[in-house]
Length: 359
Image (tube, rainbow, N blue to C red; front, side, top):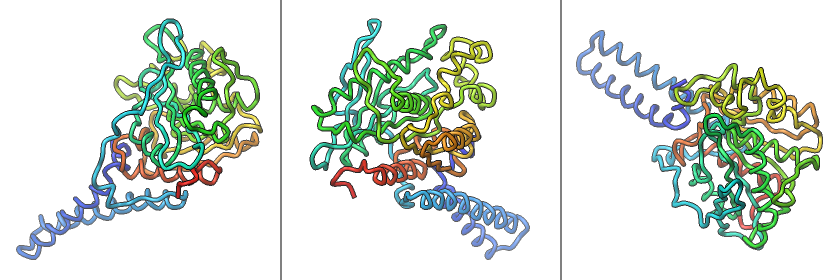
């Protein structure tokens, strides 16, 4: 669990450290050959081969998916914060609480910019509209209008399984009415989401494409495409098979969101499960799935992609090897985040959603 959480961030550093150890071992062996220096050489050699293989595999998988990684850049880790949004607005006031959206205005764009609506993760319990601030700014700097949507998180004893989806729908309706004023082209819209946000983004997009979503905030637009990472598509799989991290236990998260055990609340499970909303008019979807995901079991995401394809959805599944949940969120220029950014960039461009000035 720990190793898979680190490779996509520190893989290149482990390669350098193991090569340094190998060099020191060779130096010591030449000066005074002993069993201990031979052992050091063997261990350092194994570490160099292993770390090089893992790092190379991550890079190869990224290249095969149409992305790219700058290995030198990945050695100098940068924060996931980038100064915050250009503007934070209140989309609506619900039960006395402001529903907010963080706006990142497009740069380098010619004419109306394509629009990215992002839904953050956090197990439906935590997270914020700016938790991936560096990524949101990165896409805006390339010419997208980026809007990160808020939604109600569950406090203890107050489930939000029906409230969070309604909030995201409200945010999308607000964006539908305000995109042009913000410099965006709502007809060139993608929904993005991570983890819990991936669930909310998929469900809203698929229900909207079937014409079955309603919001008191206005008309909900149908996105041209959906891009999600490690989406929580199957709450029952997360509840039964998710790896228990202290303070972020899958059973606690699913129970808190639904208001009880999923076995006792099958109707609520059905409502929030992304399998429920599959149909052949759903927007094309890119799913990035870390192969070692312990929180959202990778096999549950792969199974969803297979079911979606069988239902007629145009789904592209990209597996990120040696990677765990939030593999991309530790550092902005890590191996994992460079993979996430570049593969998403390629997919959006192929979907006709690249800014006119983007290369």
